[in-house]
Image 1 (cartoon, one colour):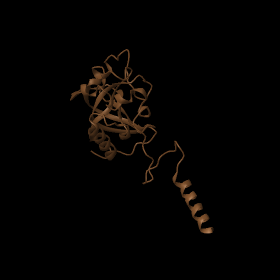
Image 2 (tube, helix red, strand yellow):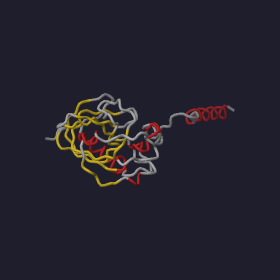
Image 3 (cartoon, one colour):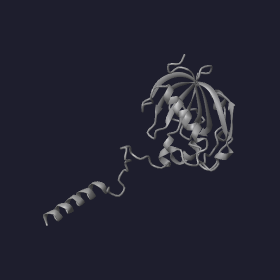
Image 4 (cartoon, helix red, strand yellow):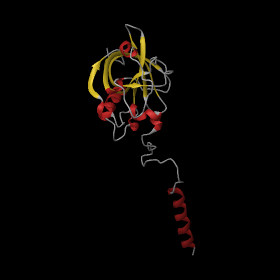
Length: 208
């Protein structure tokens, strides 16, 4: 009887340890918290546009057009920004030579870049998505991840606080209209490069 009781107690203990309550945060065997599926936590209702995971992503012109912050600041924002529709600006890949004035990592893991145009002393923002926010439908997934990896490999790790950088770079990204224009460095019309799909360091971050 004692052996039976002991075995039952061990089994009960194991059951308590192994069985997690419904809704508990899942942890992988390696001890790393499992990333949630891509969704609104990646950027609200427009997250699919931000990550090129929307149903209209095949209409994006993949050949980059050279532009500048002043040129983009002159564009007129649409009266309505829809999650299921892209404007001409959002259907184009853009490339620009700029300075990354400062940067930070946001709560959803996205890296925010404040860009600076030296000739006109103007600013705008660009973003590198969290790879966990890229879905199976994301267009240019490999390029988006490669651009972020190139930046994080070349420059100091991003922190939740804005930190100065002053690195000259060539960035390539898809246009995006952000209805929120209060972020540090945001253009008045809300235009951004989001996501960044190409990164090339010219100088800075230890490169001269």
